[in-house]
Image 1 (spheres, rainbow, N blue to C red):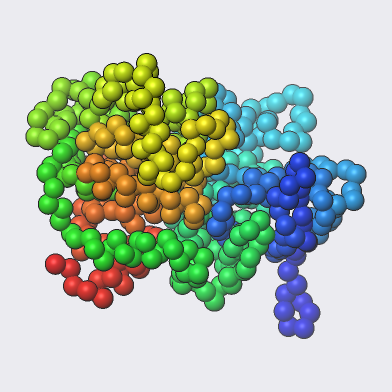
Image 2 (cartoon, rainbow, N blue to C red):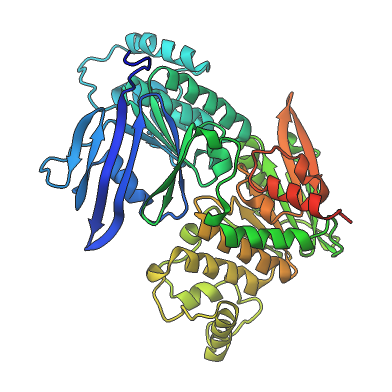
Length: 507
């Protein structure tokens, strides 16, 4: 105690860090600091340099300039010769646990510094149990990781970091793999461990999510920390100057949107499997329906049932009122999570990637140059640039997204399923995804977004269905356009709907 205040321990400090790779500046004069017990948010307005920032925090690569301090020790400097890894954990969308090994092995045996040659399983179980009790979860330590739910895997990774004594734990976009209720419970655990002296850096693309748990937020922009928003700003929004174009575009769409679409019903589905029985939905031409799953189990099951072919025992489909025995692929398209990474064939040319689903419309697509040239011209007409002469590996993240969405636009199915379309996207990419989704809707396609985290989906939605499990029953709540202000206020874009409802009455 000094001067009536408690001296806090500095856990992390980056001082004027500049990081270069291949003579290109990736991080530019970046500075930030964290104290012991902090839960600090980090919102990247672009993803450029984010991987390198995490590398600087955890791996101490050679710096062009600057210093990194961890636990009040200088662990990296621009003129340093040794670069050892820091005791910092990163928990993200991809698990770092070994799936075919049990919890006990992952938490104790595989952690760095474990040196016991003879392992007493009973002793390790006794050591682990207090940590499990502290988390308030019931897990058999001998359960293999691949049998855990996504949230249980996150808890085991948190447990491993705590047991290993990692004083700084980084969470990266964790809301894209766990549900809203699980996220609330995770936030409770972060506050619990923060009181114990652990520090957390919470990386999310959404300011609304960050402010639910963090006491301050660092805005990452232009390869540096642009500003720090302190606790006094809790409950407020990210300054609109950072995403004004996106905000204006969404706001314009809301003002011309109406609660009911008049188009023809183009697709309906009735779920027949026991765990989803009783859930049915339909979507109209040019309408966007968001189905938010409050549990990851429901999301995974729904994706499995809706996107697998020809299993009439689990789902019944109808296209434009005509019942189908199974999924007719030409009438339905599915865009997987992060399609720019998962749906491009790297060994094919850009033009081949565009043409790959068009053989049913243009049987001569692979033999007639004129047909392929027409596809190329359609892309240029829509986006104003020609990317077909470049290699797929040279495309930017946004160009890769445009390629995938244009492929669907050319195919023109009746309905398009988008699986967590905003996952991993920064502000500019989210803006572009929003415009690409509008492009599909204007073409008359129905769009169904399946998500765990609402993300930016509300910005494009005409209707929202939220699915939860209540006493082993599926609880279904539907929100039409005029009901959106009744959604939880922490969801992105709810406040924008609120503003637009006040400005003009819903017809």
